[in-house]
Image (tube, rainbow, N blue to C red; front, side, top):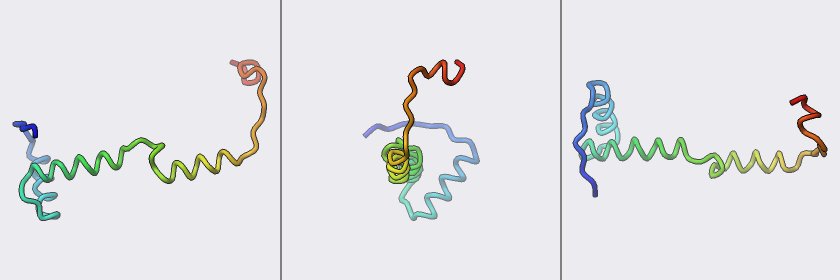
Length: 76
């Protein structure tokens, strides 16, 4: 396990105390771990999210078109 000494502003400290109290955590390090775990879950790769897979399945069922020259077709 890595130990780190960090400087927190008052607002961040207050938020960590709220998280610690809300989830009945032992210390601020557990609060930091929880906040980071939530962030990872929120920001995980879109291809791992079920709603992304559902959207891709819907798109794959759509009719596609053949484009011989993309640049000419779209004026690039």
